[in-house]
Length: 153
Image 1 (spheres, rainbow, N blue to C red):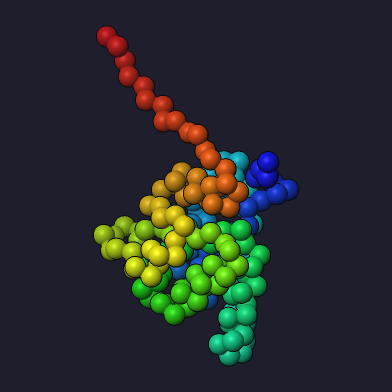
Image 2 (cartoon, rainbow, N blue to C red):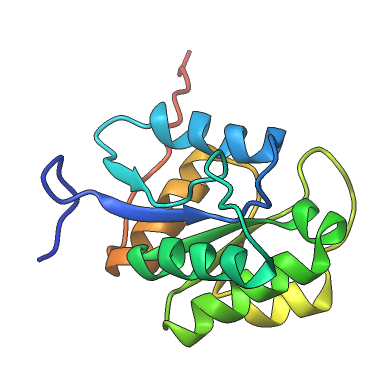
């Protein structure tokens, strides 16, 4: 079993285009507040390499190659089609699973190009995101049950 521990964290790549993004930060708020979930971020949006487009692509390839799973905030795609498609195709070339997060707080649909490449699509829900990461990165099925309390009079 390849369980998730502090010594063996899941390596995550979250799509980015080298700019501050609310969805990017929100993803890490979700994973950081999940108990007993250990991860290492392989994405480096704050370390934009100098150089041409190829230098940027090479930087992204290295970040994605290190990861076990890619997370794509769907809303980011519409603002940066070329870069997000490049990152998703790169993940597929490296045989990395892709988890797509539905657009946050909106009724927008997910672009067909993104839907086709996704291995899993989840809403902005901490538990569903963590479960999808474990399932896609380590093939761990989580068997969680919701506890419902009710009183009998």
